[in-house]
Amino acid sequence: NAGVTQTPKFRVLKTGQSMTLLCAQDMNHEYMYWYRQDPGMGLRLIHYSVGEGTTAKGEVPDGYNVSRLKKQNFLLGLESAAPSQTSVYFCASSHLRESNEQYFGPGTRLTVT
Amino acid sequence: GEDVEQSLFLSVREGDSSVINCTYTDSSSTYLYWYKQEPGAGLQLLTYIFSNMDMKQDQRLTVLLNKKDKHLSLRIADTQTGDSAIYFCAESINSGYALNFGKGTSLLVTP
Image (tube, helix red, strand yellow):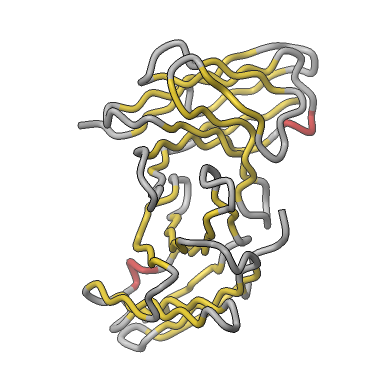
């Protein structure tokens, strides 16, 4: 049982390039989330999904797109990377229950030059 | 969202108790959480408390909740060097999906 996994672990992009971050969970969770973490700040929600085929915007969605084609996977895309998107990206997942405990992946460190 | 407030830094000696404090924003938050983040790692859920409780104990961890003051604390008994990490307080947001995180408290445990 791997929990929540993320690929890649590290990536360096040039401004304007695109990339996709992959999140996978094997806990059969309904909900999945993408957060970003910047120095000295807490986590901010980018997008989330409450089930296969559904996505919704979080607090900071601009510049990102997401897809949830399979229940176990949640993809985060950057169509045209900008230096402001340099950050550590965390994926999380949770069951459909009131307590909504979220379980996090190890993170992807992205640098945009 | 509005800020969940935490002190940025706490230093304790090994064997002492640590108390990390948090002030949250939404009086309607139903659940409050404590996460631990070690260097280069993701966030690990330590514990959570339902808003109709005022205390929860789990081994060395004790969570106290003062709903009137919107104050949450995490006490770690017999703090060890392995407890050195960043601790995040989080509240459930009214929509029920996302969590609103504080900026984290960096705990340093010295021998």
